[in-house]
Image (tube, rainbow, N blue to C red):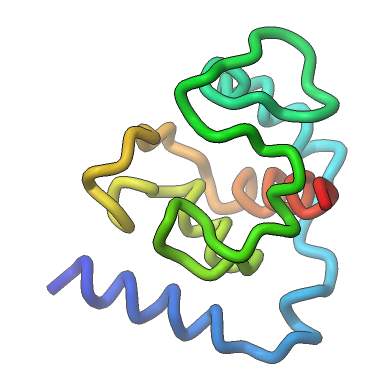
Length: 117
């Protein structure tokens, strides 16, 4: 029941108007720093991020131009934030761990990822 409720919330946010989806979400510069803090490059190749170039997860080049996140969600800022905060809640069979990303950090990381068109 909890998973269904969470998914309904995610879908509700995804259905918001296009104008709300395209407005600035957070601080992209801070989001870039947070990607390093959370170690995202250990699993992903991420443009503009130094350090390891992980191959476990998909490369994040052009992530903002993709239609789907994690093979399940429409690529909207709201869905990206939900995915970053708890990918296992959305898809327990995916390999991305729950890293304890806070809502504020998810907003800023999403702002940075939105710049990767």
